[in-house]
Image 1 (cartoon, helix red, strand yellow):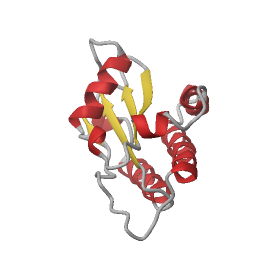
Image 2: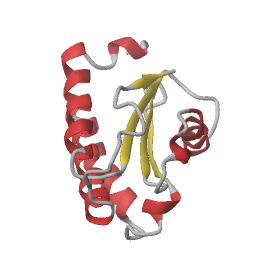
Image 3: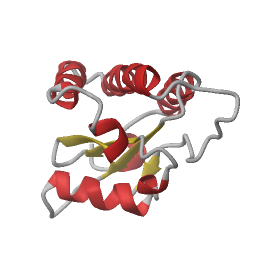
Image 4: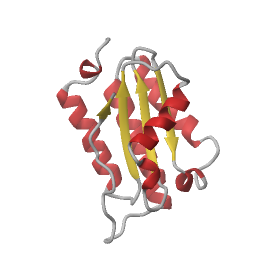
Length: 145
């Protein structure tokens, strides 16, 4: 699979976006997914760049979460902003990554993304519950590079 556009079908992509919407309905947190073909950089460093390119560092409560994938490299990273990182356990992102990797190993990328989104959303809702003044600060669409 060499093209970002072929990584998920339109239906799978919509299911991932629906999972983001479902997760964000319970939190003021923001979740984004970014998919690109490859990176010449360390995947975590690239994920941090994308985090800033998507303005995820500008959320009011610093509670954005990015799931970054470089598909040809078979690498993915989950990174959270300062607000959520200060509140979740030290192993939370690794345990979320393991849940996703289990699905990815079987080629079920859609379900891996959904599992990671819902797990992140659960933690976000525990620490940053939704209230009536909440606004969706970032797009729920999958970004591609």
